[in-house]
Each structure stands twice: as C-alpha cells, then as structure tokens.
Image (cartoon, rainbow, N blue to C red):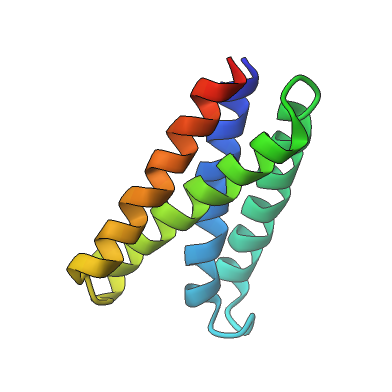
Amino acid sequence: MAWILLTLAGLFEIGWAIGLKYTEGFIRPLPTLLTLAAMVVSVVLLGLAIRSLPVGTAYAVWTGIGTVGTVILGIVLFAEPASALRLGCIAMIIAGIVGLKVASG
C-alpha cells in the first residue's frame, strides 16, 4: 500500500510542477488553486508512505517520479527539447527508481 501511496504522491507532484506553468506566477486563480491543492495532496501522500518506507528511498522515488513525469509532459505540452541525451538521462532516473524499489524489498 505504501508504494501505491508513493506513486500517487509522485503523480500529484507532476501535477503541481506542471501546474506552476499555468499559474503564470500565481496570478491566475483557478490554476493557482489547483496547483496548491496538488502540492498539499502530494506531500500528505508522501508523509503517509514514509510511515512504512525508508525516508531516503521514498523521497528519491517521489522526486524521481515527479522529475520524469514533468520532463515528459514538458516535451509533450510545451514543446521542450527531446534530445537523445535528455531522454538518456531520464532513462537513468527511471533505472534509479526501479533500483531503489528492488533494493527496498
């Protein structure tokens, strides 16, 4: 269950990171409200997950999911560059997340 909570926390982290772009510096009310809500949900779910997962592993996986998802959505939504080097680095982050999951049992 902790891994499910952690995955959901990572997905909400993607939501608030992408949401920041849509707030336009927190001047747009609805995107700002949704972004702040996603922030709160993300941190609360992370807090629940670390009750039974090592904090270092949980934090690394949480930020990893957020990083990978945000980069991918940045490519798709905002036409950010998708160079081979950039995608290779994302693959290494994914490998790290999988490695931490395997190492934690």
